[in-house]
Length: 241
Ligand code: SAM
Image (cartoon, rainbow, N blue to C red; front, top):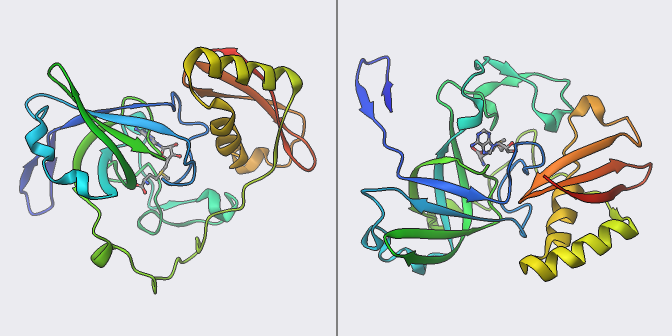
């Protein structure tokens, strides 16, 4: 990958890894990391970076900065002003005042809880907890999160001062049964994952007023069918994707 600056310098950026994630489509991915703690993903380092010595010492840090490419947004142009979902999709602000995916350089940045680092044959993996990354995301860089420098308790949050409130999620009898049988087969707590993901209410602003309309969200190999009721969100069924 080659990026040019207005100073006419050219920088070579290399993809160092690829993400494997429970999120198989953009719809449903939380807007920031750490909001869905049940989300699991891992980075697989790509050759020639697939060496454990590139990660030596990282295990002492609880969190990492992950820089990545919004690879599923490359076909669309960026705009100077955007409508962040946080402002109900109504008000526009400058692209650099947001974490929008469509930007002049489609680069994302997330602080993510570090899990195990492990190797299998020549493949090196970094487990991540609570990531906001789509399956297949190309990784540009990994750095340790430094609490003494990166944690800023006095910082202010502009138009996004805190996380949005989650909504209560109810499961149909069928969905509950399907969660249980999925857990037995795959040893994964899919129910808690669904509850956290759908509880964020990922519907776009223009659909937020509509009740009882069926939505589908892909998680792992499942198409989660759900809909919004008056006071809660309801999980209807877990279908094979
Ligand atoms: N934390 C990052 C940041 O601040 O740069 C990402 C914030 S962005 C608002 C989060 C959204 O990016 C997610 O809700 C998901 O829809 C989208 N996303 C995640 N991985 C992506 C990818 N590889 N390509 C395109 N969009 C992606």
